[in-house]
Length: 222
Length: 261
Ligand code: HEM
Ligand code: FES
Image (cartoon, rainbow over all chains, first blue to last red; front, side):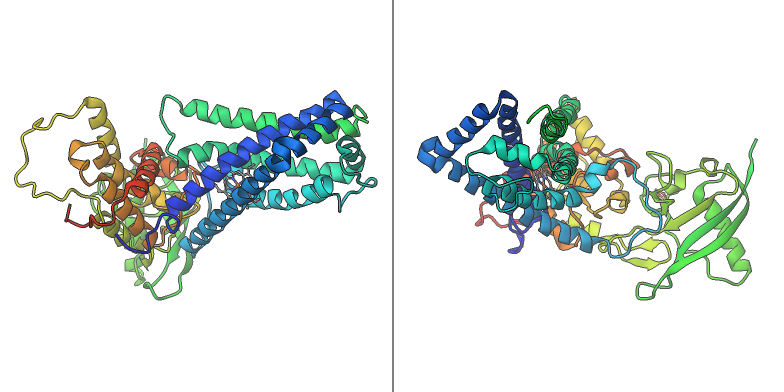
């Protein structure tokens, strides 16, 4: 056994880190989307839900979740960077003619959609969590509903969210299927189901998330 | 009725591993559509030799789809446009009169170009030497069915063992990853009783060698499976990932690899 061939140093080890942190992030976006749906029940429900999260486990719950998520994002990006470096070095001379037979738009643009999501996460936190970047009015802590409506009434902010969700659609549709392959969950009995699961989760998360800015712009939420 | 084709080839020419290469254009005229792709290149080469030029160097051996030598990327696809087909088994009827055909060598850091379309695939040999075997003096061929293997397992092992080591998976992969090849070698032994004793050591050593050879890493595009002339399945990569994780979790450092088990 070569000493340098450690689990985290290896290609497959990094892929497994990427897949495990990916699962946490996928579960997070599902939960986050479900929480967001409270907006349709009105200001009280959404603000109350936020209140609940902030006081869960005497306030510790939210911070535990934040630390776990931050660690997952950091590890996910660390692994992505390592794999990307290996892949870029593995083909120094490009083909003159490139033909794609099996890969998809989503699989080829994972890095691009990942980067869009990284920038989105930063903007999104500044926009609706901390409030330093809040076009459309003053940000008021605890007034989750009002903050959301006022910022989505700004057309380009709404557009930014929609673009980020299209990137999320690409990242999730390949990522969910891909992480199962990486973890070795590939069996002819379940393979069709794996693709369907990836698409159903992606569609649910992305359609629900896009509906919020669209509903504000359409005047359904105000 | 055989038809004759007139084609334009754009072929990668490179004098040796150290020289810079480039594309050169050739006419291939009066090519019968019953010819194989390699026969077409033979005809072009005869013309080049008669004109006093260097013929296009390409690898080939069996010309019947089993040795895996005939590596070249044809219009962006390893071994050309037909599924489950090596270049030697590709016929010119897959092309139209007047087509332009771009012919390039496998492109991967681990497969350096030796000359024109010929690449050095010995990185694959080193990956196999790292663990793709069973450490036992096997002597003469054993009696058939001396070790019973269930049909389903035998089929899976045989499907993985169909791999001819041609390297089309690496050539097709956008990341130049060798994981389909390595997983085929891991998997055909993992399905058989003889492969169990060294199963965990094998996967760790072969993956370490694969990474050492500077192949890329799999991001599950699936291009390898689509390009494989023997239809080796992505399922093998999943098995390798699974075994690698298990091997990493259960590895005993005091047990040394390489014939000692
Ligand atoms: C923040 C910036 C991000 C970057 C730079 C990034 C980058 C990547 C890359 C390069 C891959 C592997 C590419 C492939 O499999 O083809 C990947 C896979 C994945 N990503 Fe991300 N990503 C990011 C954020 C996210 C987020 C926010 C989520 C969850 C919502 C996520 C979930 C996943 C999943 C589930 C996988 C599949 C893991 C696997 O291949 O086994 N990523 N990401
Ligand atoms: S020459 Fe042997 S496989 Fe093509």
